[in-house]
Every structure is written in structure tokens, then in C-alpha cells.
Image (cartoon, rainbow, N blue to C red; front, side):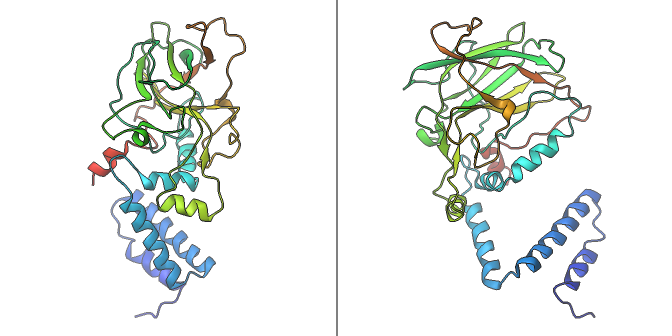
Length: 300
């Protein structure tokens, strides 16, 4: 029997896991153990700090509910979600519109709307219109593409925060017309702070970060034979456009209101036009980085 020290215990742990039947599980766990052990050695982790980390992760788990996913929020603010999303993008067969984060406020089974409808039940601010076209990577229109949208209200709150969890507002699904065109009415969303009342928010505050996300509207776009697009459009006049606390902004996704828009389908409303491009799907399908919080809790 070997006496183990802070270095040889790593080799011993890897040896015990060497017979893992699933090769991908073995690869992931092998790397996780090596990096975790190296992290502990690098910072000279103390017993009190180790317990503090375990306590923090326990609190993150306790904060998860069917309408709140604190672990996804943790992944977001650490930039891990952005890394996984970027790695996922590299598996695409062809380039389309830049993706962005699904975020912790996505919900399945949003209401269906007709083109031109407003997704906000009681607009408390002037309405705006978003419109454009969904095409393939070569500009060919995709008839009947489906578009899911969700956003905060004019006060910076999602429906899960502003109402009871049964109410769906400021979100909905649309079907593009025969030319792949879409348009809908909404209100300009407000940039907002991530939830600061939980363990992740407390960590962000201790790090001296502002915790703000710039104003944006989420999009989930799909069509048969094409790679599902999870993205968001970010309003360029937001003060935090260059310092998104979850690292979701890309230059190609920053939008402004049109000074002049002859194609505006609802004249009289301020408009934003954005055309989306979908790449073709892989034969083995494409995954999604994120999930409805309710589906994660229900799966436990």
C-alpha cells in the first residue's frame, strides 16, 4: 500500500476510474479530477475554504426550482455557458446567424401568436415592431420557420419575476410566412440585473461586478432539416452593452432602431429589422445549450 500525498493521490484516483466502461465518461471524469486536484494545489485550498465551496454549491442546489435554475445562472456568470456554446457552434456544418445564450428564463409551451401580434399582454410603454426574414446560409427563404421569442418587460422583469409562475407574458411563438418573413409587436425591453437574492448573486456582489445584462430579446428559431438557432438581439444604446455579466453579446447581434424603414410592416411604430440565417442540421442532430428550468427539476 502506498502512502499518498497531494500529488500521488491524483494518480491513485485516476487508476481507480481506469475501468470505466463508457469511454466519454472516463475522458470527462479523468480531466475533471486532474484539473480539480491541480486547482486545489495551485491555490493551496484550506479545509475551511473547501467546506465553504461545498456549502456554496449546496445553497445553489437549494435555490433551484421549476422556475429558477441557479446552476445555469452560475454557469452563465462564470462564462462556462459561453464556452460550451462556442464549442457547440464549432460543430455546425455551415455558418449561420451567431448564436447566444438560452439563459435561465426560457420556458417551453409559450403561447402561439399570429404574425403582427403583440407578445405583451398589457404594454406599459410604446410598442415597437421587430421584423425580418429567415433564410438558409445562402439567403434562400425558409417558409414556415418557427420563431420563439421571450424578453423582459419595460421595467426589466421576466414574467417569472413579475407574475405568478403560471402566467406567461412577454414571450410567444410565431410561424414565418411563405417567404420566411416574420414580424411582431412588443415593448423595448429594459436591461436588468441577474437575480442577486441567491448564492450566485451574493458571489457576483463579492466580486465587485455590476451583475447587469444589456437590454435584449431572445430568439429560438427552427425549421425541418436546419440546425436550431438559439440567439438574442441586443440593443446597442444600453450602457452595459460592452460588459454583459454573462458574456452573451456578439457584435453581429447588436441592433439599433431604424432611422428610416420603408419595409416596416406596421408604419408608425419604431422598428428593428433583423434577418436570421439557419445552417443545415447534422445527420446525428444538434443539441441545445440550456433548458427550461422546470424540465431539469422534473428530471431529478
